[in-house]
Length: 418
Image 1 (spheres, helix red, strand yellow):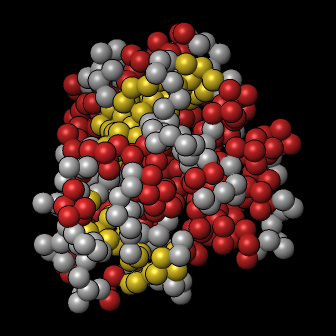
Image 2 (cartoon, rainbow, N blue to C red):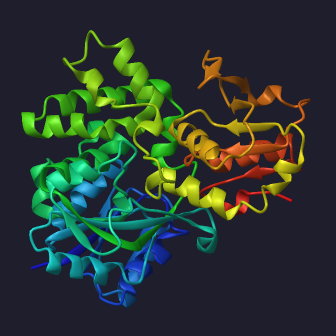
Image 3 (tube, rainbow, N blue to C red):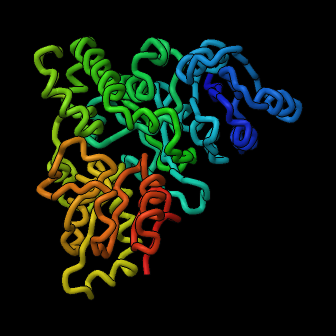
């Protein structure tokens, strides 16, 4: 059978949990059950959920008296789920009305698949201003065997966990979500399943994911030491997998999405990490794997489509003799942005601005400047180059340069152009 159980961990999301649950219930084809694991909320979440059960008969509520964290809550939900397929979602996500129907049909078409997933719409407040991210693996529902997947895999691929439907048996085979992997626990679990068994790709938006600078994962990205601890665990975990799965992680370059923090870890702790760990990081130059055409997959696809959308509004730069363009952010997205910006033959960028320099002075031969040091500089355009921190960057520019031109990629309403 292909019964789908939706698992939603909730902690103090009383303002959003009702709309999230209703989006799961008001489907063209209903899920078998919706399980909300309330993780010791101190707001009125439980009251809302208990009232919701009157109008949502498939809703099951499990409450914990203490707050143990989202991973613990998800694993509880998986253990009590009766469905054969699990969908793990955030309490503030909105499920597309056709998601359950599309996933069910995909499992019926490819009954041996362990994981099926679609596309995600990222948004801040208004879904209509959201941004689609897709791996663009096919124009139709398609199963990719492990060999097919390895040939198609790009080092910036990241399976969108809020749009991933996974067989419960495969989920438990991986040991559920590992607490030590923290906010990367779903990445580790789902990527491991995909590399072992292949996956089914559904070329439709399945879920709308709210980008929140205060979310569990994003908050911890600010702490370099905590981030390094998690990356170290991931490296050790994967390098101790059985040979077949370990080799697939190495060959795919799946770890490359972690960018500079991982690269620094592999270099600085090379003597204490498992042998050949450095091979996990495949390349930091996107031109090596984006291909010759303008890419449509992942972050690269988002950057490409957004710059093409804004082409007319960016025309003012071409009329300036020497436009000054600064990129706000120094991570993987910026590497990709620089490559695509150059392919589109747009004016030369002048430098990088960051919230904290961490002692670094250059990024890809561009000078790094701390954001607080640009107050007197003339800048014609700011590029917000971070999925996780776009909102914070916009807020900082509102404080320092409220009338400045800027472009955003994920929350389109943050763009300000002539």
